[in-house]
Image (cartoon, rainbow, N blue to C red; front, top):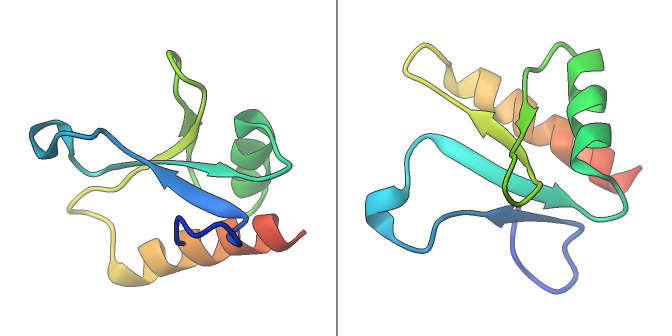
Length: 82
């Protein structure tokens, strides 16, 4: 995913490095965060929505494999492309 003007998905993250962690907040153009989370859940991918500023988000941890992260990102791309 990129933050380019032509992208249909963009990452959202804290501006300060000290606030960053394994959370990845993102938006998919044309979809609400709830719609994105429900579509991911249908693919057996767990995501959630944030509460203050509504975004979809992943919370990857040390137990996640690189393949699982790639699969989740590919699923977001599929949702973005429709």
